[in-house]
Image (cartoon, rainbow, N blue to C red):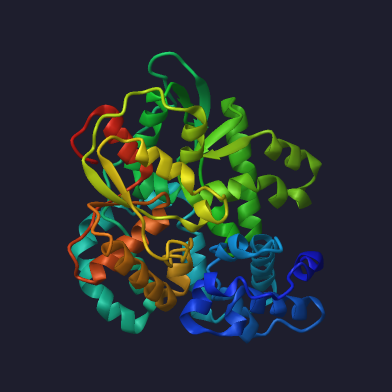
Length: 415
């Protein structure tokens, strides 16, 4: 916990209306400046109490406060450092320890997630039926049962997808863990779009988790291990630009050099040698080459926190959607407030996540759009679950890549 970063906060309060937990509860210690005050107390010698740990655990890490802060406080780095400290010194209750062990031994490992495909496919109806009862016994397990999407058919991507037409660039593509196993159709669409825009797409088969889930939850050693493996994988693939289609992954990978500072200069330089770009960011900078065909749709675009706040990418996805003939983009009220997914937050803080999810679902449905567009798998699962709980007519959810893919291929709808 860096004292200099802590002292950058002047406690002005601009962060308060941007903070989801402060919006929900109005509690000072559950605001960014309140949590920074607790960080300062701990750095100055106050032991990390269970109450302090609870306030840190309640933070979504959505980084809306980073956008709102006029003083440039690095709350993103502070909360990551603080969570690592919590995991080092705070003794959790046995059931909490068991849940966290389950999550971090499962979700960052694509092969283990892949093993869940058949059970998920067979248990879809049962999971929906038992979730309300399980809620009374263990809200976290109930959230896990409710959030899991229907098992998609597995997609086997080739190691290289050749550019269509003149080659304009060569890029690597991150397949991710949750994205790759729960939403493989998004990766398939991403590779096709990049190829149709003139890119050779290199997809290393040995890649795994980038470390985002671990880093955002204080699992520092695991996060560093995954970060090093990701860098090594793409070095061996011979690419220096990696296109990422998951907001949380992209924000973490862009910070690899900073995250790996304690690992020595060699790792910092290796991290800096690889450029990470979000898909929308990359396509806008590259410029369109392939013809866009009409899609007569109204879409509500959801700003994923780690895209809008952590990476500052807001206009680029909208520009891509605006470039599709016949498509109308509708804005969602309170777009800067987190949906409650926040990586693993909806598993560890299910009640708060549910409140935020319900709030987001209400505002999504109020747009009256035909389709919700999201650029993060966690947000997709969270909002889909919240809409289903409301008993409303389900609104389909797609990634920006899938909308572009449908337009470029001249499909009548987004698959």
